[in-house]
Amino acid sequence: MLNINRLRILREVAERGTIAAAAEALYLTPPAVSHQLAVLEREVGVPLLERTPRSVRLNEAGRRLVDRSEAILAQCEAAVADAQATAATVSGTVRLSVFQTAAQSMALPALVALRHDHPDLTVLTSDFEPVRAVPALKAGQLDIALSSEWDFVPVPADPGIDRHDLLAEPVVALLPSGHPASGGPVRMLDLLREDWCVAGETASSRQAIHRVARAAGFEPRVVFESNYFRAIGSAVEAGLGVGIAPRMTDLRGLDLAIVPLVEPKLERRIYAAVRKGSGGAPAIRAVLDALAAAAERQGEA
Image (tube, rainbow, N blue to C red; front, side, top):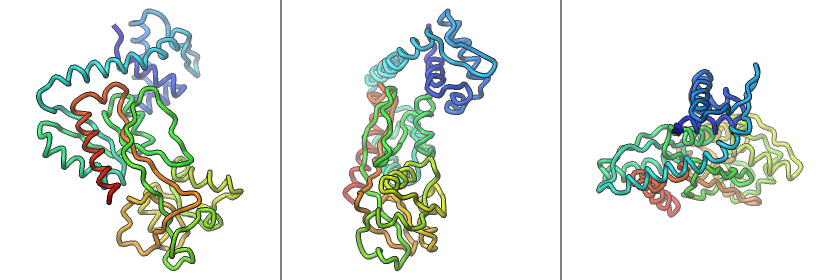
């Protein structure tokens, strides 16, 4: 019989191209991944990989197994969820990942509500940036991952993931106090010649800025980088440049102008990702419902 976790490992190797990259995504060591793949080959009865001293790639048998792995894994998740649906109460443990702004505004209210409504349910919450959360979810280390998608930086569809959209959040411009445009809505195009305080190069917010700027023939001058929007706000307060942030960012206490951003308008969409087929499990469904209720209240605020 096939081992489901080993199927997940093979899928990660196929997606990421190397054992080292798959091991990093799965929070395993490369030797552990290699060992699990060798065991999987013995289970299947044929080689699945072509190995050289410097690389490894899937052969035809490996590719065929990976092609079927998404359906196999989804059916296993759905079968477990269906069995759990017979329980009289919502119980068990759900592993949830959050990121900074979503933790404060959505996850914490949802967790409080869950304690009241489902006292037998345990939700283990950890802080993951979205770029790390979905690989950990697919590897089976999480049950629900809060993630996000920015305008101009779409997230490719993933056949192993079911996405539950929660909230479309406006993005606002951050300007130093007294900036000429601080009195009202500002066009992003009018800010492109400014110095910029932005997130790191791989962040969706940074990529959104660059794509808008390049479409207009500009290259933003980046003078400050941080993956924490409050730190970006502090840099703007200090007069280093301008920036952007999702509206839910906690910027209380900072002396800066927070103004609507137009032309183009930007949004960040927050969603919960679960492994395909797992969303019908009562415990996971309860957490998804609580997150959706918290998001709805946040959207009305």
